[in-house]
Image (cartoon, rainbow, N blue to C red; front, side):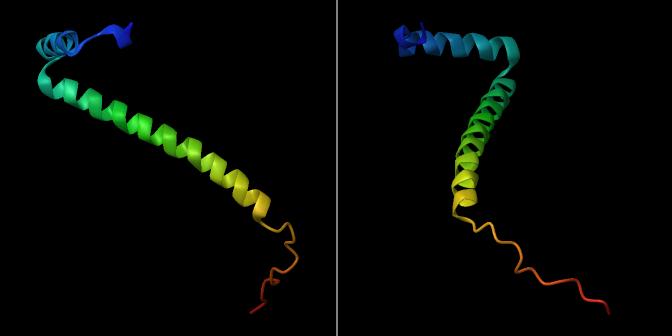
Length: 70
């Protein structure tokens, strides 16, 4: 389990990953993972915000002006 790993074990795993893939590649993968998590969180919050905005928005759309004939 990940919860039972100490900092020494995590350090060993990171060193092995850096040796296998190269330090820049591991950093790129970490950055991509972080961006993915941030995007997922923002989309999850965005859908909640859209639902609350839809409930607050009035349903009357008859106030729109007709197209002008110029």
